[in-house]
Amino acid sequence: MNPNQGTNKTVLDRYLRLDIPDQKCQAMYVWVDGSGENLRSKTRTLNFVPKCPSELPIWNFDGSSTGQAEGSNSDVYLYPVAIYRDPFRLGNNKLVLCETYKYNKKPTDTNQRWKCLEVMKKAADQHPWFGMEQEYTLLDTDKHPLGWPKNGYPGPQGPYYCGVGANKVYGRDVVEAHYRACLYTGINISGENAEVMPAQWEFQVGPCEGITMGDDLWMARYLLHRVAEDFNVVVTLDPKPIPGDWNGAGMHTNFSTAGMRSPNGILEIESAIEKLSKVHDKHIQAYDPHGGKDNERRLTGRHETSSIHDFSAGVANRGASIRIPRGVAEEKTGYLEDRRPSSNADPYVVSDRLVRTICLNEQ
Image (tube, rainbow, N blue to C red; front, side):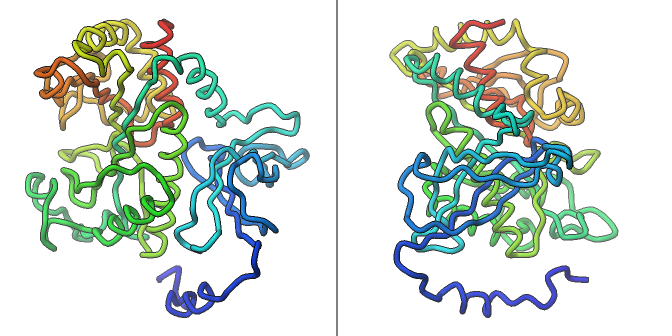
């Protein structure tokens, strides 16, 4: 049964085209819920068009329904931190990314942004840049991979990566719509491609400096789920959605500092890799929401991954923990790629951990 039976996007569009009064604005507040993986949202009317987060009112929600509070003390506060154009309602309407705070004004357990922001301020003089490659899998509403035979499997991996054709690519409409939605909002999306497993895709966000990386990636995730909803498709960020001889999904993270991007920055890159090698276990714990348990299914040393138990690095090696791109090695300047973060990792936690290790020399 189609859960959206009875809805009609053409009819909806008739209402979305209705004019709203001048200086009225719909602001959709978006936040990370108590799972640390899922997003929630709700909308309020404003009597002005906001230009920056500080102009927006603090709001609240029922945290007992999102795993962030008890029913006897359920109000959780929403603090606006970033504003984006709304690609669904258009006009002056906004999407508002928020941090969550408890009744006592302390951050909720899944509010990782505030800590990340403090770290980014400390390392601001090193100008840390990030580029994150978000892999994901499209599913039917029955949670079966989109386009896969209902009682079997598609052909082996090989023809699907960056593929073209109806027998190789499933769900391109969702991908194209999401790409345009991100560009419209102002998210610094830099590309997309079909991945190795059929119905698996990737989009890239960056380069972004500091806290903007986490902000843009979380909002891009929200847009992905919201766009897929319009196509009656489900998105999963599970790092190993299909067991067996199928690629998992990661969030490969490209990282550089001003020193790495300078002439002969390869020395800074090599120094960073040495630092990372000494705290491999701490990074593994930070690189998925369950302290490494999700990545145990993915980081097996097969399917373009390193072993979760061992640290490794190499030039152009997609089976290493840290990859130095071939062009970087030749030009002796640029960035490194950390291939360990899982697809469902919190980008604030990943960027925080990288900066702590590489820029702040924390062990």
